[in-house]
Length: 81
Image (tube, rainbow, N blue to C red; front, side, top):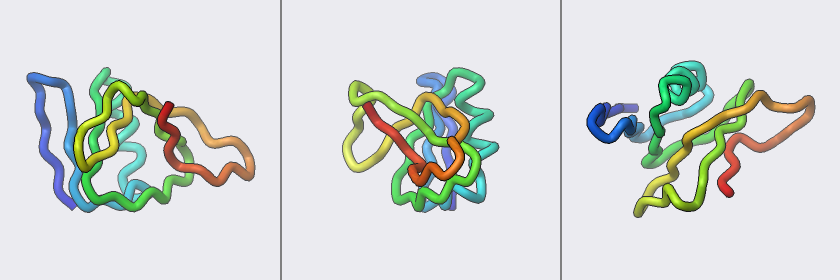
């Protein structure tokens, strides 16, 4: 896993990440009104569902700009649109 902060554009780029291991860190970036962009990710969140919008689409990546707590028995980790 590696990450790169783009403070000018308020985007955090995560490369080859397992989101379940850093989901609190990802949520903290979103709390600071930053977008998080994933390149090569395994989505295994336990606590949160990361949310995004189709307008944030960027080639070869997934971009999220929000999150919510998972419901009991919910099986998804990311929701775009």
